[in-house]
Length: 502
Image (cartoon, rainbow, N blue to C red; front, side, top):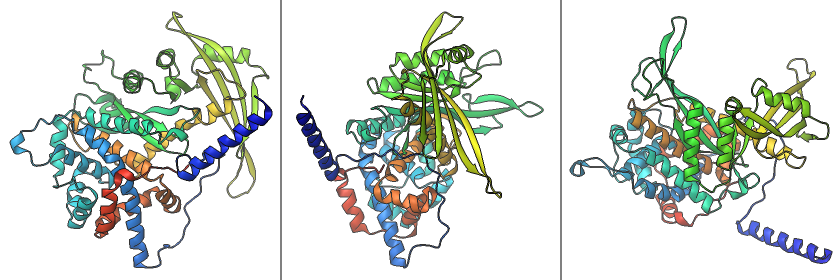
């Protein structure tokens, strides 16, 4: 191809891309360098009148409702297949009504079933909900939902969320937020809650304190999709269960066992989807690496200094100055070193995997409080990679993949301390507790998408995540909203085009 034709082709491609941006089919995704998090301004309310405050509540609720109504039909279609074991003659509330009620419990940050009964039965709240969700014909009692979850297959609720994510993939709503064409999937475990008594046989057990008193706890492995624009979408949960645990001679369930179960489920539900799995140092071992390779997943696994000593020895011996890159990331200087094709042997040298190791030394200047003097900070990172490192891909893989693992930690913090009541079980029954957890993930999924739309993203930037959540709850409980405007959104929900800011 001649130079003139090549330039002409580039101009035509740029014109087509600009046309897609103008029509809303595409958007620029600009990779921002690392910057310090800005604190919320300490100022008085920006509302100048009652009308202005009311209009902001109405507008914020409308923007969130557009996302809820656009996503809800996909969920309800899948949830309609949930088996209903109740006696037909005694059924007052349809199962889809119970599911909408359960989702709204977490959408509006109900701290308990008792709180849901008190708040969601208020006349103003009920009137607004009937406008926003016409399928919510009757108000169930929170205990009715609890009894339903005790007896039904709650895994269908999680399957509904998976189907919703697959719909977004199929419609290419999130394609622009992938990294190198792959969805970054962060997997990590966290404790849900602890108890001094064993309510269910599935609870994990440990001994704490000087007297080694038994403590029972629930631990869950979460898979969260982390995207370029900052979104962290909960996708799947795998609970550790001690149902088969009898005594101390029997091994309890653990994170690595749960990971293999979760990985098999992800592969079954997404057999051809390209994922990059990001994991912490607990998963830097041969079986986990082999699982990722067999499933054809890309991965970046944190490598701690005390782990895989044979790999570290080879890295120290083979490291050269040729495989080195120095770059500036915002105010931080990064020095990368890598060694490709290190053969890792495990299981008494009977099995082996080929891995690639990269380290990053990051330095930056901070100001010492009170003195104003500059002090140098140094951090060292290391990862296992399944893709050979080069000067062209090392920054992208480490900074945009490996470092994205922290987003799942932020997701845990939000769910535990920002109104979702992650550490509240909502039910003593194991099956019902799982159901509430899956409903909470759906509500969190809705919020993440809604708060990345243009109007609500600006609200979050101005007032913060918590204040925006409280604004939506106050809008639905404080006064009856404009019915005409709400009815337009509900009737035209399938026409709205979902777009998310970078």
